[in-house]
Amino acid sequence: MKVTIIQSKGQVSMEITLVIASILIFLPSIIWYLLKQAHSPWWLENTFSTPFIVLPIYIVLMFVLISLLSWQDCLGYLLINFIVALCLNSSGSFNNKTCVDPVSFFQFNIKYHEGENELAELIAHLKAEHYHLITLQGVSQQAKSQLIAQLTPYFPYFVSGESQLQQIFSDQLLFSRYPFTHIKYYKSGHSAFLITSRWQLPVNDINLLTLHPPSPRNEKLWQTRNKTLYQLKQSLKTTPLTKSLVIGDLNLSKHSRRMDKLMVGMKSEFVNSWPNIPYSLPVFGLAIDHFWLSAPANICSRQRISQFSWSDHYAVKTQVDFSK
Image 1 (cartoon, rainbow, N blue to C red):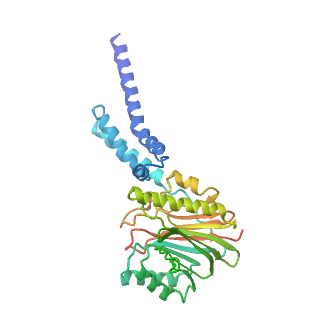
Image 2: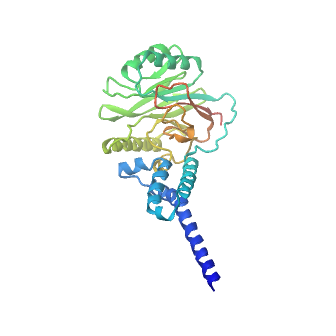
Image 3: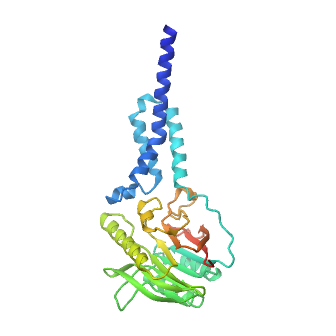
């Protein structure tokens, strides 16, 4: 009888251990998945924009259950949750495709760097590469003048990101080998966070939408960002062209549910482009520099460029097949 009682206690103890283990392994990820659906308040959406919030959630649970665990168990479960967070933040298993005569894009938030060395490095790269379209964000007025003077011999068409006539200014700057027409600035006061145009590729006209809404560091900026995203959504609904292309630093994580509702019917491949920190692996970053494309065109490749260490963003190169 005593042996039976001891065995029963052992089974109960094992069952409790399994329950605790399941809670510590799965509950943080479940909480993150449920709360990342939230669109407000602003601080909640920002907090759950990354799956690495799984780790602080785990630590809270650990303190609740600390009396039932050894430190070895705590470290083991923490490691498991860390691996889960890495998997959730992975950009996926996109395999670059070899495309015949692809169209090449360069996008980069240069974060208002005006140093001569930094701009010279960027200009040298853009001159050397055969990009078809260059989209820059975070460009100051001083840097715009220098970039336009240096790059227009190589890229004769550009959108300055501002209109003196309409008294509209932005930090965007676009260069291309091909013309832009029907340029439209979406006003927000004297700023324009969204610019639309028709980009006249030889094969077809592309409905081009480039944007850089503000980072949602407080409620007012969060609302401005969301207004810009709404303008983007409305513009996509009313465009007369079937071929549309959205490029920019949206200050919106790929994990946000807003992204799913915003880009219905479009395709993308994500690249973790922020933050640009020395010796940081791509899997620790966030995909906020986006590239969205309507069918039937296909993305051949997307890759971040590690050359420019002076910005907190990575530049991203994308190649697209528009032949279909």
